[in-house]
Length: 268
Image 1 (cartoon, rainbow, N blue to C red):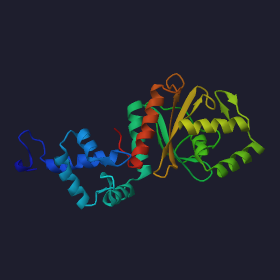
Image 2: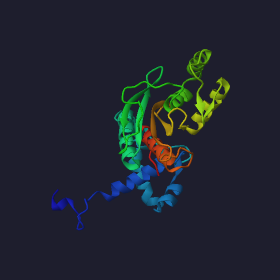
Image 3: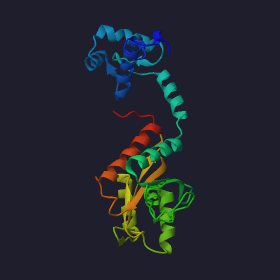
Image 4: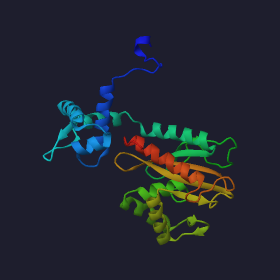
């Protein structure tokens, strides 16, 4: 980079007026309803006459439109940009990157699963610095009923498909699903899945692996469909799976942030 491209303090120079115009556009984009000139002026602490010049340019280029009440909302050009950006976002690649970060920051064994039509499939597995002794690894198909990812997928399946799988399972169950050590009959399992869906969270308190706690949360796509599940596990004394715990908070932040990226949403 040449000296002409830097300011006196070494920071790259830009076009201040463009940056201000984008701030106006951002403010309109952040609002759930059309924004008036006065509202923009108050929010951005700029004079109405100054803001109006930016609005004119944004309207000319199709980034915003003005409605009958003289308020402003996003235009077709923004839609085109948004769709183009979303096409370039790979949901699984974003989820893999999120898992890498979660593993590095929390030093926990964690995984990503997808739904293969009948059950969760492990497509990424990362060990902690002290691995957990389990027989689950990359490429293994998990049970829809005896894994946290399976229950998250079941909870988010279309009603008809979920009912089909559950009814078939409970005709001749090899064992009853458990939660907090308690076996669940069919009605209780339906209630359990409703809670899993509401919280976007499922956890085991050593229910299937002695002294091993497991937790999982789903990542969603732009259509609101479940894309994948991120799970983490560890020794019960090291991993607290209760709501509000450090690991629960880290997991929910991870899946929430990943969903926002995939859906093109910005976090404040």
